[in-house]
Each structure stands twice: as structure tokens, then as C-alpha cells.
Image 1 (cartoon, rainbow, N blue to C red):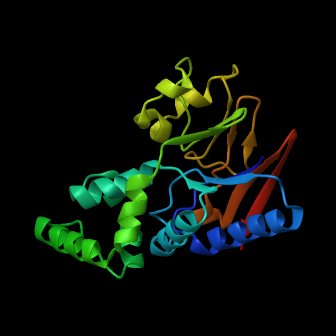
Image 2: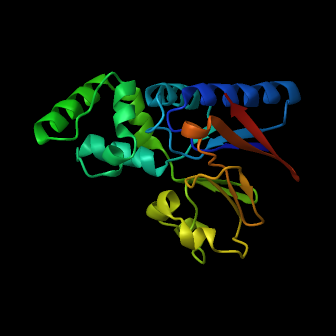
Image 3: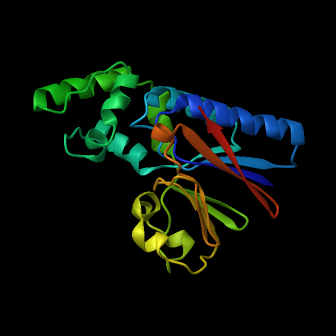
Length: 231
């Protein structure tokens, strides 16, 4: 099975469309016996086209079950805002304004009345498909020797016992752990200038929303390569 894993997108529909196109061109040309494309989360916030990203991925995952989208902390934060609008949460303080704009809604977090008005407008503007897609996102996937999640795992805890919170939020204790895990962890969440490939983990978050580069890992047997879309 050939595996593709794609890092954090954050509203960059242009880069998502490009890298998905590259991946599908390879699959069509090489005809692997089986394949999966795994997106490791953070589809919304910060970049300009969160709506376009959710539209693309929701339709793609619906049509092709071999394309898998995992939950990121920003995706969960978006759902939390939609359920309980707050001016203090992740969404309000880390790029949610841009997400609202992508739906044609100018959110104002400065007063309760403005917040509730914007929240209602955003709910009205969002297709049911986008909400259903966000609510259905799993926290992890694993194939062969590789475990895929958004942020990482808690060292010393069995993969099947990892908490959803750690899978989308963990940083230092995971990054600082040099020993091998039960499987190689492929993740994003923490931006780096270039993809980090280490014996125990691979970080694919190259800050697409500001770097203009979206990075993917290609795993085909023992062969591992990086694929990048850039503008």
C-alpha cells in the first residue's frame, strides 16, 4: 500500500488543490495496488479559504474512501465555537476571523451582541456538508508501521489508549522524546521551516498559510519521499 500524508492546510485551498492533484497524478500514472491519502488536520483558520478547503475535502472524502481526513485542534476549535460562541477560545484568537470571511461573514468578537449576530450568520452560511464533515473527523489512523494524527502522542501510552486531547494538542513531551514509539508517528501541528524526518516521527507542518508551501510525505514500501506544493 502506498501512503500519502499531507500537513496542515489552514485555509490554503490553492495549495490543497495543487498537492492533491500531484498525488492523484502519481497514483494514476504508477497504479499502486492500494493507496491511502491522509490529511492530518487543521483545515480552517488563518488562511483565506477555509470554506473552499472544507468543500473540497468533504466532497473528496465522500466520493473516495481511500482519502482520509483527521481532526486537528483548529477543526475541533471551530466546532466548539459553533456550539458555544466565545470571544476567548481558540477560534476567536487564532484565525477564526478569516474563517468567517471565507463564508462571507465578518465576525466581531468585541461585544456579546455582535458575537451572537456573527455566530448566527456563520451557522446560516455553512452548508450542512461542512458541519457533518467536521463532526465526523477521526483523531487518528494507522497503516503498517505508521500512525497518523494531528499533533502527536503521549510517550509511554499505548496507541489505542491515546487521549483525543493529546492527539490534537500535545507538543513538548512528544517532541522531546527521542526513543522509538510503537510505530512511526506522522503528524503536523507545530510549524517548522522544513519537514522533520526523525527515526520516531515525521512533522509535516511547514506553515502553509504563511510560507506558501504545503508538504506531503510519500511512503511506498521502504521508500520515503517528500512532495510539496508551493506558490
